[in-house]
Length: 54
Image (tube, rainbow, N blue to C red; front, side, top):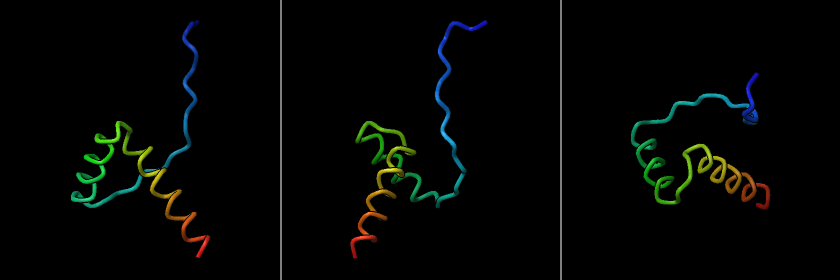
């Protein structure tokens, strides 16, 4: 029996992005101190909230 609490797993899907975009996302995420996944969540949230207000 493990005494470590289980990590909460996220439901995810894989996507493919162009190598150039991946490098850019990686650098931006590193600069902000977040993961690429968290950065993409932020970008998507911003995009769709902006789109809904138009």
